[in-house]
Image (tube, rainbow, N blue to C red; front, side):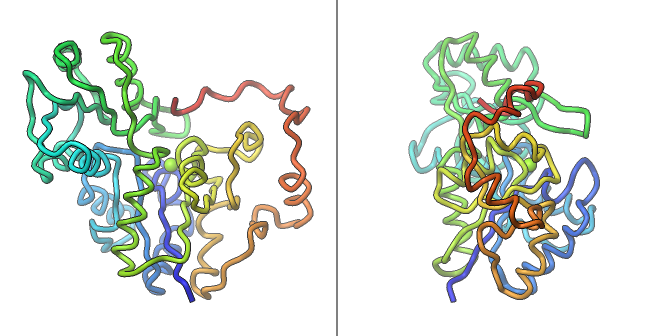
Length: 306
Ligand SMILES: [Mg+2]
């Protein structure tokens, strides 16, 4: 039987704020006890894989090796090493980004760097001004991820790397290139890493995430299955706003624990969210582009990413 591997977003899927999502421990236990290949995939370029392992440990998911994490900072390092060996960078970012680039021997350069690389974290005006000068001297602009804002709580967000990159786009007139989800290069390298963990080819790869613009869009474009969980940033009633749709919709990752333990995958429409069965086909099987309900809804929050 061909193996299934899982790419798993973290915020909104495994935890929310500082709380584990109910059933997340059992879900990860099931993956581990069944030897199912998995990789946590995050657009947050601030932490290192070691930081993320410690964070999960504090939340109650114990002993996950750093090799089970792939961040947009690692993706940025992979991209630069592959496309421009020997390049130099001026960084706006935190430890996760600095470490990822340092480990791949990419040098810092504040005078004439090949790239200004923007990651998650607070940027001082002084640092932004320096980055702006580097761009004026010919550096190209690269961001670890396109998120304009990131959740920090149920009612609270913070500006993301996409917002910082927009600032520099405006000041320099240069356009940024965005790595991380939903960029295909993020999914390409994550899939490779997942296959390395599986020590062989995978029959199918499933992306589990809570955000349509990054997790589900990226999965669709990379030809993977996209499972949306409703434990994070997306509500069921907003699904019809999107051109791309998830393969399955789940309440939380806990809905998958049984099928991972039994090794019996459900079919496409068998989403626990649609427990009444018929609704799944009527809503998604024959969905109409001009859903009248959509006209009466309040405008959704502007997309998290560009
Ligand atoms: Mg998320």
